[in-house]
Image (cartoon, rainbow, N blue to C red):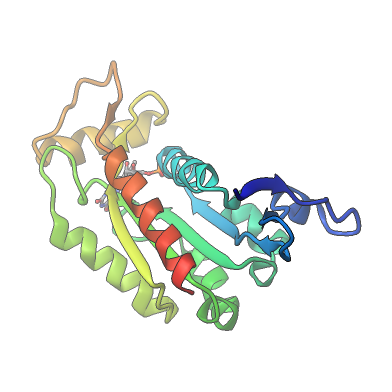
Length: 214
Ligand SMILES: Cc1cc2nc3c(=O)[nH]c(=O)nc-3n(C[C@H](O)[C@H](O)[C@H](O)COP(=O)(O)O)c2cc1C
């Protein structure tokens, strides 16, 4: 019977490598097979994309994968996608755009990403919520991929959230108008989450399949 066993930590490796330390599957008498190590970068403003990234990571870890989750802005200098077997990126949409710094990050590592199984997910209110606009959500995603020249094997658009509790006064006013025009909730005494968590888990499963066939 095969068992998952944590592989010995390479103490010479960087901290990033420590957290992403490879797991190995060991069959009796056979050479250990390294489990894929995945880098999951997220770009969030109000935190929903981070929650989605953590859910994807949890699903993959349950399957025995080693996943390192990092904020993409901090990862600009730190993370080396070449040190991983697969790369996932998630980013939210504000005023019709994913963050410009992410465009630069993706372009910089374009050749490394092209050589690995990759996935991208976009988070917006167009993808779901009180009055979804799936065509707009798809346009945001397509525009991001066109501008970066990136062709991940798997993409998805997930509905995000309206978080009045974390908005400053100006953003709250903007969102009351934006959400109100879309027929959404404008009672600012609470937050509204539209993310379909089952769809997020299915996305993680589909990426695990991608890794298997890579
Ligand atoms: C100031 C602001 C502008 C936004 N602009 C858009 C937009 O243009 N299109 C859209 O579909 N959603 C838009 N949203 C909704 C966000 O994409 C959604 O709230 C998402 O959950 C944010 O994810 P984050 O918490 O990871 O940043 C906007 C939200 C805010 C606060």
